[in-house]
Length: 443
Image 1 (cartoon, rainbow, N blue to C red):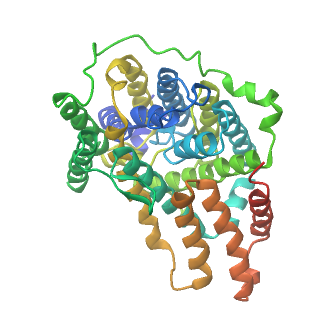
Image 2: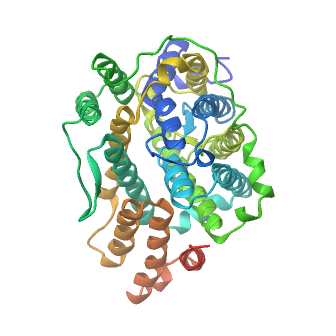
Image 3: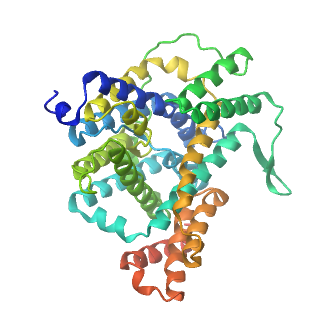
């Protein structure tokens, strides 16, 4: 085992890898609660049952996808990087594809499956790197920041801090209500722990918020701590039912598939480079074994869609494990073990409500928006598409619409500026695709 994971070469031990893997789990365990609440649209009232996924099945799918993805990454990529259904992509799945477009959740899973297969083929063929390199770095950062604003807006809405307003569209909610006060407490305590640099601050903040909610009778006390693993039957294999439905094959769904593919592209690439660099695994500014790591990620996403969850991706929270000493894929196996163990604690996690998960959405949003500092706002031809990408996501309640807006304006502003040669031909292809996406959006 030590030889396989190169313990001696990387200067690590079983103890360091175990602590690193456990730290990574604590840092990302919030997804076990946030993902089921998001995908089941638990905060949306009067939603037809046909559009709402089964909570228990999504919980089980989330834990299993995270465990299997982390195992594949650990054994194949051998990186201390854990995987789980991605934040932002799960919001796109639920609020844009299902709630916004009225598509069955089976269709959303179908889009995840197809985008993951494309991801796998592009990774194997080597085209993935060419496509990523064709997209300007400013737009990549704008997409990340836009998703951060989008999920922060969802968090504020779920907390009751921001509500609808007939006169101004949105406004400040009633901050004195019990659930809103509970969410505010969660935000404050999580911010304090994050500021102090505590590992697993987001998860620990949710735990403390749940305890306070139970004390003030805002959250039901679970009847037991450990219970049977929820059945996967409601979601397992449901992805394949969408392929026999003619309503699945629309231009809107094509745009959705491209969005899943695009966001997963950069989420993975950015996380791999960031964590590998932090762990000192980069060689000559290149990522060793990158192909296998990306292959592991795409396989995990395909498996996750079959289980019944949104796109599975590499987690930047893995950096917390690296900071605690993790250097090899063994740490990912440890993280996977904790995710498997969590399957038996569904009775505890199932009582968590949307106001409890709101702080996690807001804090993750803050972290994602930090990429705004990497955009050169002094160049108007860059600032316009970057800004439109970022601001359109929360205002249209759609990640896909934000990406489309930015990718349409980028070639236009660059052409007018006389910088035509700096625009990669692939960007013109994206221009046409997303223009058609807007034209046929109502289909």
